[in-house]
Amino acid sequence: MRIGIDFDNTIVCYDQMFHRIALERGLIPASLPATKGHVRDMLRRMGREEEWTEMQGQVYGKRLHEAEPFPGVLEFFTLCRERP
Image 1 (cartoon, rainbow, N blue to C red):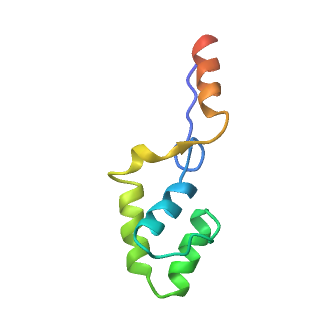
Image 2 (image 1 turned 135 degrees about the horizontal axis):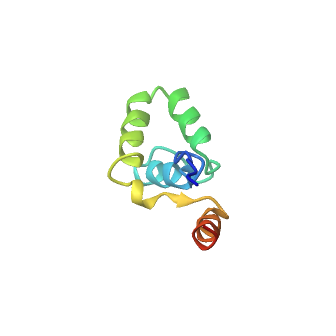
Image 3 (image 1 turned 120 degrees about the vertical axis):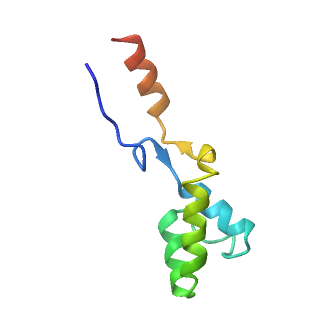
C-alpha cells in the first residue's frame, strides 16, 4: 500500500522558523506570537512585503532543514514502517 502525505503544514510546521528568522532580522518584536500568520500579517501591515517574500525563500529553500515536524508525525512514520 502507498500513502501520499502533503509536506507543507502537514508534516512540518514553519511557525517557529518564520518567527525566529524575523527576529534575527530585527523585523518583529519578540512578544509577537510565534506563528507564520502573525509574522506575515505584521510585516504586511508595516508595508514590508518584500521582506516577507525574502523570508519565504529562506524558509522553503536553504533553511528548510530547520523546519520542525508536527507532534506525532515521527511516531506515525515509525508505526507505518513497523506495520507494512
